[in-house]
Length: 207
Image (tube, rainbow, N blue to C red; front, side, top):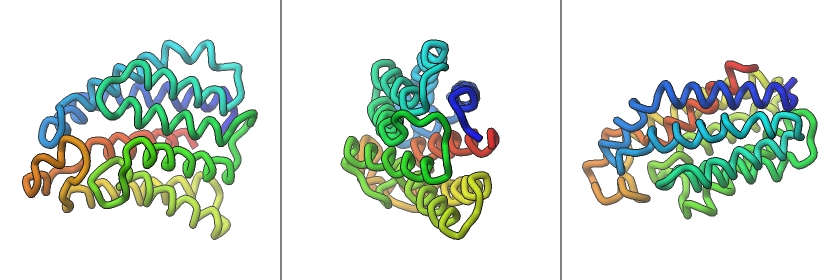
């Protein structure tokens, strides 16, 4: 079961993972972007960690909203507004909820992706974080519909996100700084899709 204490623990684990992987994420971004994805995201999650004690006793929606606001106000570049919006929209979907049900996670997942699409004006297949997030969400919802529990469904989501990250290596970037590279963007994996996979992996580990 995921209640507020468990959610806070998941976010703490996510912050540590992003901190550990920040150089790798920045390296990926150096190849096709501004070279700041890992650094910016690590800074944002460090700010989130500082804010967690004041969020810890709140409901799931309020915790996620607080995380989103901390990311938006502390992360530069594209990743802050995108991830911040994703967490805030997920928070709105779980407003007042004390624990996360499989259906609740599906609703939060949908809302988060809707937020990223709205903010980034992007679609699947454009070499962005959506190329990990959208297949993951689809796989998760299909697994729940097939009667699998949350842990098994999140595993399916992680596998789909991993395939999505691999897929980003094969396609042309048409959004953001990477789109300036044209054909040269092919062969590189998208940093945002990669960090999205890491966030999902931490959720799976917690389950």
